[in-house]
Image 1 (cartoon, one colour):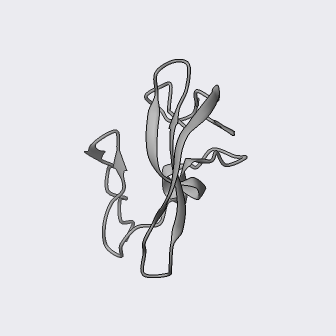
Image 2: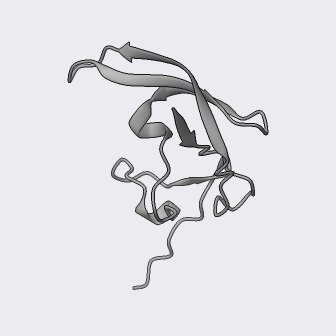
Length: 90
């Protein structure tokens, strides 16, 4: 079984590796909603990931930081730094 490698290839998060990543191991993780099918994958470039299969698959469209869910009152992180606060217009 192969999945597209989800690794980011640039600092803006707009380019993904996308090479076929081989599933090296499949296992079940327990969660509050029941077991999750999980896997360990590795691509030819050396990227590797462990986690639920649904989190290892690529979306059809890239996610913009403004579309990510976040806690109320928090600011999104961009590359390890806080994004600028939106300016209030009075």
